[in-house]
Amino acid sequence: MSAEEFKRIIKDYDEVSTAIKIHREKTKEMNGRKKQLETIIVRFMKHNKTGEVQTKKSRIIHRESKKTLGPKKSEFKSIYAEFFNTVDWNTFPRVPSIEKARMLEDYMKSKSRVTYSDALTLKTKNANK
Image 1 (cartoon, helix red, strand yellow):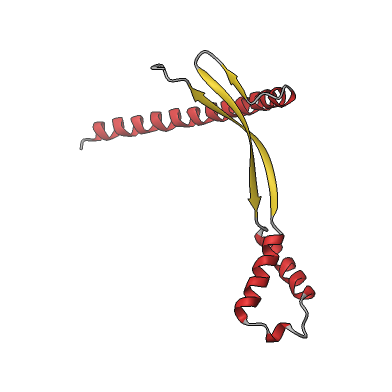
Image 2 (cartoon, rainbow, N blue to C red):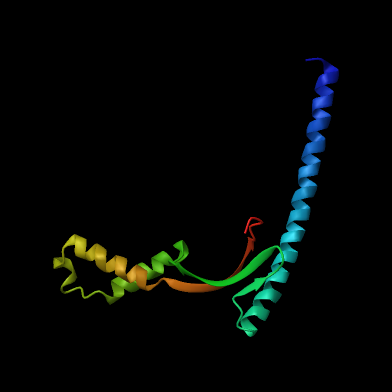
């Protein structure tokens, strides 16, 4: 490979990297704008009890998603401490290990929290239909 060819490759690499950086910045801006519009659309759809909006080219579907989140790692120590503070130490040592594990597992599950969030889905209409 000649020095000139190498310089051309470096220049091309630099141009591609710069174009990608610009594209990422634009995408970030567009995602922010999309999020703002989603908030407005969801508020309108909830207020009007509408689950779907039809346009000429697509359908916008509103749905509420439910997610169960377990405890955070930073909460584990305090949850373990709570669990062992609630244990009846007169009977706990005689409980089989598998049952102790189940008890701790159930206690950890009880510390889960449920979150709800709104989401929009854009479905393009099929041209063949």
